[in-house]
Image (cartoon, rainbow, N blue to C red; front, side, top):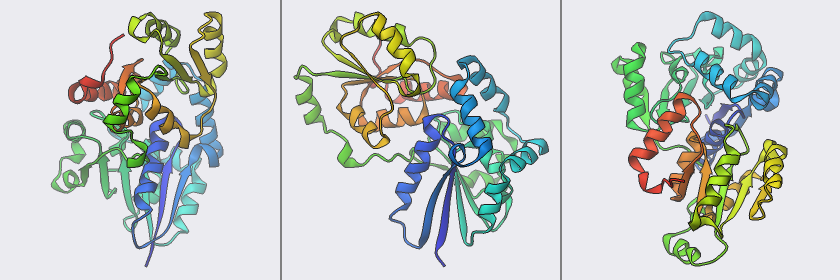
Length: 325
């Protein structure tokens, strides 16, 4: 009997959704699958839309506090009841599906009742290196697999979550790459990059379209103050922050800057691949893409504990990619 695959995610931060579509891409060629559906709770359900609104309109300080509060090694019954009341319709939809297999790329969603049913295979996908959010393992007794991005992350979970330290649960933790949608054809080879380095139209691509850390104007100034980058074009992916970024860029009359609003996801890799250097905060998906594309990287900031782990990862294994401004 063919399987029905559902990938549960939330469009708050790029990592969760990027991982969801990466998983879908990897499953497209797998045999014995009837359907693959990605459900983004921030697009389909009212409570999810409220979560998305809070994320999009909250200060960096508040988002950091929310992360800290939810970074727990165990869930309470209140957590579980609250999630299932809020997303009752998700449970209802999934319970009506036969031969179901669930992938989860957003921490709280593995607390749904459907993920506690023994006959439903549930796979958790971490989206950060080194120190994945504790709640990835909230439902460790019931999930079939916990996919983490590196050996350090597995060690971190085993050291900090007592319930995982059984032979059965240790075997559930699988080390695998971040599930990106990037194809080999998207990656410029070294010879092409070397040829492009001799051209004048070099670019630095800045990812400022999501959470702003408050130092974006300073980052642009620092880049422009580096003699080596005087003739580089700076392309800023501003997204929802377009008006804010346009304001300080226009005030300073930065003629070598181009600000883009929302860019289609399918074109994002093209922009990144064509840039000589990319700049952004230490998100898991962002770091994974930089490593895959072998781009020089300017770290613009670190958001909370899990991104500190991402920085440790790239600093240890790919320090040659880091650019200091």
